[in-house]
Length: 291
Image 1 (tube, rainbow, N blue to C red):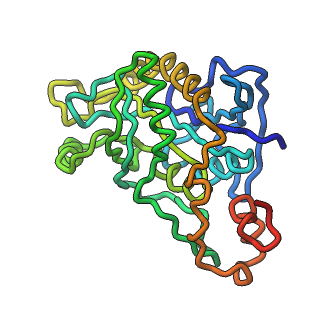
Image 2 (image 1 turned 30 degrees about the vertical axis):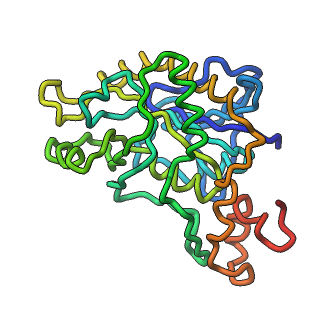
């Protein structure tokens, strides 16, 4: 299988990359089940990329139903080293308006029903996650977004709620009191698993609405979210295209070795079936494995 340089995950209303050339659909099997959809693989800005519609192009998968492990593991099998996520979010600050982009650097976890690690079942690993977003890729995205002309905020805290319901007003005020900036339903699990897979991850959080704390605004509706996100789609696509062009694949990113000191279980004690399942992640650390 050919190596892919960069992966792209599209969220609500963002189901394809219009500038993708020589594209083909690829279905990928993983030990963790099927990814959300077939991958669209092609050329973008001089690099090979793979695009995945997070909720399927039919948009028929809830945030809580996403097979995050399959999605990230499939990108790893493709050889992806940088992963760009595009996501719809609500704003928790008055100055962060609809159609603005935020490039968060922190998360708060408010999920309850999700698997967010490849490890367990006989394998223990603890990756560093104090800084969950790749700073290099986030800067590349910032430069790309500002060059497109999108009002873009560098840094911020993303509250990852469970969903699928939007927040209560009490919750929204609570998150504001914590100093959080935006709220969404999908990115934290992707970031955790990407770190375990040694993939550098960053997200473009595209504000579609004010969360319900903003009493001068109407409460959030799906129609409102989708309409504004579709308005953003062209800017998001152009931002990603410019970012892909700017990524220096020769840069020695330390995140590419996130597991180097994380694995606690000795190779000889890892169950054989788990070694097979985690081959794409751990083979370079096993004796005789690939680097």
